[in-house]
Amino acid sequence: MNNEYESLIDAATELSLAKQLTDEATSGYAGAALIADNGKVYTGKSLSGTCGISFCGEVNAVMDMLKEGVTHIKAIVTVSNVKLPFSATPCLNYLLS
Image (cartoon, rainbow, N blue to C red; front, top):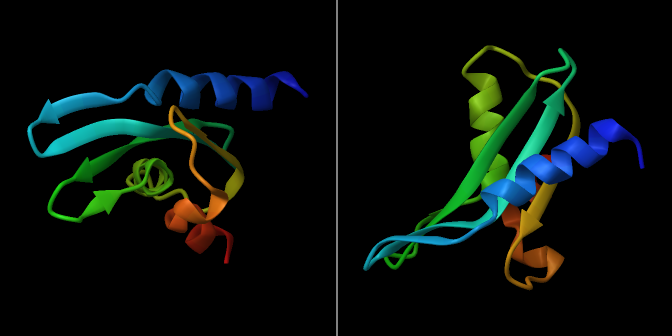
């Protein structure tokens, strides 16, 4: 594996430490990092609420990228600190479609 991908995995891993924010919200079940065609790394972490609304780390990384008007992803990784089946990441599945 090349250093570029290893650095993405490292960045996503750092964000994948779950933290209880309130009685009803947790962040960090998953961390994501992507590298855009411009060579810059963008990151995001998940946010889960008991109300049933959650935001995936992948989407947050993409939103970070989009804030700068960048639209092309070269590579993206997601790291979770809990065991989840691939289908449990609908946001990543959506990005791949």
